[in-house]
Length: 310
Image (tube, rainbow, N blue to C red; front, top):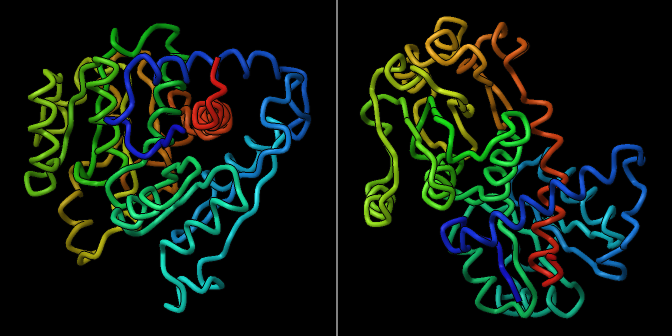
């Protein structure tokens, strides 16, 4: 049984295998409709149970389409309709029931401890669709997208992140920088730098992460510039103050000009004022391709969790 909770917990070889499988499966679907099943039907008869404690568009769509293309089916639970949310049924009992009815569980949660508690009591694989400290499915898909566009391993590229460096997406990207051995430059205000424990983990594993409080220095000669919404779902902060803190960290045409001429822009969405409309809708922006690729990588993650990754 294979869980998919944090990128740091999965070997580099398995992560690479997931990406290669996603590439093969996408190539085979060039002339196939969205809900047509893959010819090999690897997950026929399997049920993915999903639960969203946080709002979701791309994760919900991509996992639903992914399991159906693999010939399985999905059932989405509404947390506010469960006995668990009302306090009349324990988490262990809920986990055992989900394990009895389903074959895998995808959880998008507002609590890191909860996903680990579910893991403790479940007898089926659990996938982290997003938690406050980690967004592994998003970042693995982003790596797939970068390599698809650049047509070379990400280890040969310079990756730049601009924005809050202490949220779930950048945490997973930092972990991925170690697993895939790529250079990661982070541009953020000083009080929004990455988690110290995570940076210590990077240092221990000889990662290539550099932090800048100057957007120009971070963006220079980058192949890819990433960002995320400046006010994320997990933020419990003074919104006006945070927006003011990031006023010099918007990705606009001037910032993109610091990067390489063929640099691309990525954003996991939804977006806010952290990127200008000109960049977001410009030729360098690959956000729609990035979003669509969630389906293909999610499929290969599911196959990994079911022990059917070939």
